[in-house]
Image (cartoon, rainbow, N blue to C red; front, side):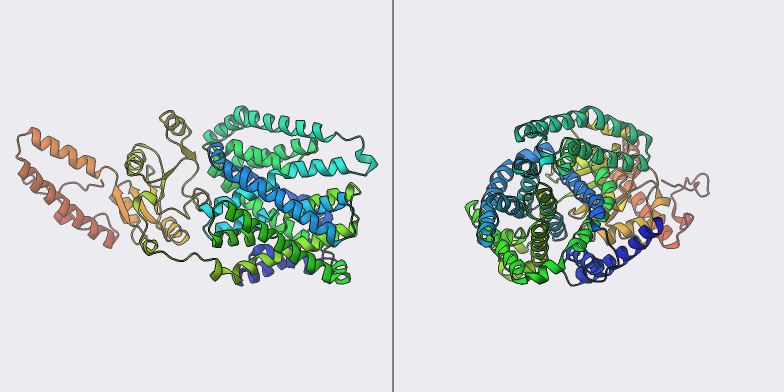
Length: 586
């Protein structure tokens, strides 16, 4: 058994790696690579791996993790700010596309109205797993366009619950007759969401606070996965959407200080399992069914894409989007989604559709997903908004973003000056007590190790114009700064250095500024001391200029030589002692 799993793992991993690299290189996205890899190794081509049904059961956890991360992105404040887009744009899209696609299925087949409903309504949902990475890689997720697309996807994910309820109500399976009626499922949903909200407030946050104090990253990973699986299990036990449970758990933690740490810890598992999900979908693709009715599959896929694109384009125009943005939105969301496979399987178990119909419409969803990268590439020039005169100017300070790592006495001053100028600031620290104290004064500080590249990325370093390391002590290395610069080349990097030895250690690192933490305060105290002795202001200024000039020259020589003892001859000494002052390291 273990040998079989190992062999299957090697085969799946190897083929997925090769095809994803190829399709990424062609600009077609990873999703298409996973689907093709699954189809190639599956039972209809090379027959190297079987049992896709059991694999997809595990891989569906990837969708659950995806919805958890989506929830983490949506704190209640932002969720409320997007209410018009979510419950206006999203609701209208699901209803309009659901009715239209159901009509297409009903007219294009000989299925009953119930069968057309359970096939057409799921086809109205788009692929969150495909669209979100496309928006992220294009840097458009946090733009007005990205927020509209995200809002529609979010409402689609929320609509899974009523769609599951509809399948249960229409079920012809005698085994489902003893199941709860639709109105009771609705009450279960409300109760489960309320329970998760209370659990997030009174159980999860205190739990993560305890783990944060321990400083054990492995415990964070374990607790994060336990939270997702636990929320999903509760929903599954009630016959509800596991993805919705994970989403609610994410929303409840989105406003907590641990959001970025949780995202960074869950993301690798989400990526692997979501990739496995699409490989399993590719394996389940019944190529024989497609070969028997190729015109039907291709025609229905094209009808699905055209119907959704036209309707979403019209809805976008009604919501006062430009025609280019509305067209881009329509094409981006024109495909069927991964939840279609889940709902088709439930409809099949409910005896509303035959297995062959589930296979055919699974192929239609897959084919529609394949077309999305091509559609976006082909229409890129048409969709591109014309550049206006002022668009070529560089970013202004009030539109920039700063990421500050370390919120001690040094980081607080830096942050408050940037905030005073209107610069949006994200704060990261590992000190739980400091985070709690900061919240008492209205500052939002996230828990996490800011020297981890994955956490920086989750905290928004990819969009930041400033990355500022303000931690205490000597924790930074040239290799770390080099890695940050390579990962986020558009950000200016500033560092708080403990002393001149720390400055010397950072020689050659791609920094835009280094500040020795006590230099300015020491100079200011010396000025105050001289003034108290009656020294004239002009003479104090001359003395400061002398010290700064020599200190700068000596530091430059020390950095070049990599030796703290370089340029000792220019240290200011006491004449009456006649010798050099003892080496300073401040």
